[in-house]
Length: 347
Image (cartoon, rainbow, N blue to C red; front, side):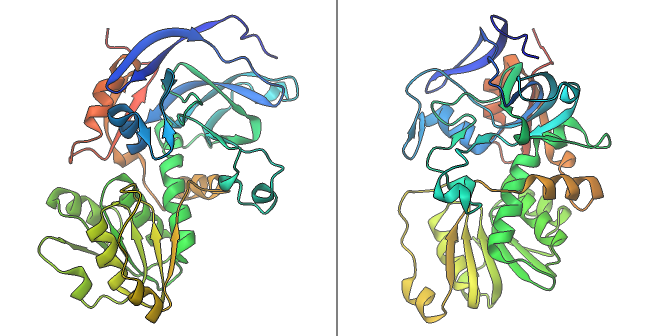
């Protein structure tokens, strides 16, 4: 049933660079294949920070008021006409995207590359820093009772780590180098361990983050300011860049063994200088990561089994009226994951 028409809710709305406001807005009106989720936890992502500080990411530009936040979870409170009523009351993790399901990419299973994709918190599509959000029913993934709602929200960044390791070909016995020990680097390390990698090297210039990496799956850590990774003799099977920094990407490519794989995840400059002769002479495979596809079942099982721990990544909790503070916290070296709890109020 859809009883949301005309109802209002609170949402944190981005109006421009550095300008977020808590406002009263319309609750989404459900389409026939959608569910309405009462949002209970939203992780703060680096993309949210980019939009807040710069108003754009590449070709995605904030040109009208936008609700940020795409790492989300909550409880289904209403359903569209084509969705069974028994889904009401389910605790779900939201896969925050809507593909067309008809284009060539979708039909080949690469729905993350759908040219008509609508993705939470990507202009002009609103996200989940709000009391409610709508999503297609099959993108609202039921979670087990044992999973916390914060962990359910963090299935989204975990999915990036899963997708990166799948692209890297991580398998039992693999050696993997990861540049960047922020949230994505840490989940990538956890997933690499879960996938059977036996050596996981994490590079980061911040000592505190290197220490965190050792707690979350890394077997080795390295300070790239003190060690020339390109000359360290690692010869890894795969390199995953979660930094977006050109020096890290170039050094990481030099650390990959012949026929190895380079996976670019971090958001950096639009154009980088790459060591093309090294890529050619070693027949390296260089690929990017653009979100994910079909990762939620794996993410839920990894969390439920205890093979990865995303609850421990939460280093700060904020109310819906504290989104600006949450965005600021996300830029601090000591922060792994700031989480907004829309049901929590500070004023």
